[in-house]
Image 1 (cartoon, helix red, strand yellow):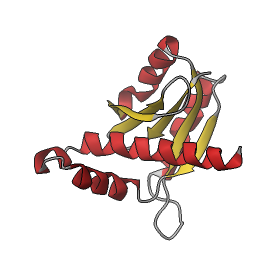
Image 2 (cartoon, rainbow, N blue to C red):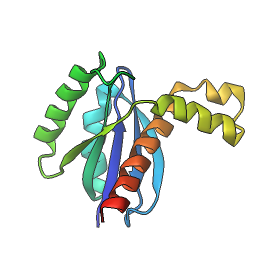
Image 3 (cartoon, rainbow, N blue to C red):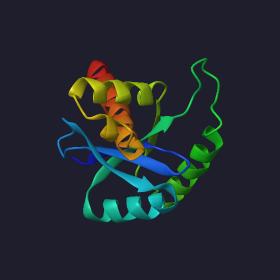
Image 4 (spheres, helix red, strand yellow):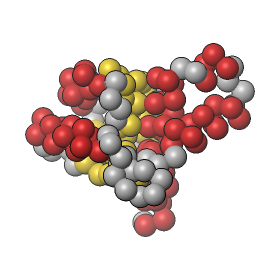
Length: 140
């Protein structure tokens, strides 16, 4: 069984989260410079078996498309072309940054660490992945 890898795509940085090989636990993996994202994913999939990409679907709180959606769609097109054997699914990413900040506060992480935007992106990717995994548990 391959891993599921979640992507919280951003203009400058992209948060990455991944499951264990049994798809039980979601873990924040890293934050990647968005310009290097496709190369990172190609290299990662050479080392690890990835069964599915889950990409955060950027929507505004009112449900309308966000300004970032065209960039994310363009990236997903490139991803599908570069790694055509790995399917891509979308997952609503509304409120993930807020949830990431809240999780950081509850965990007792210091103020300086909470200001680390890369950490917020990683945690947001993990929240996307966890939400996706939980939705599949109810479907099975």
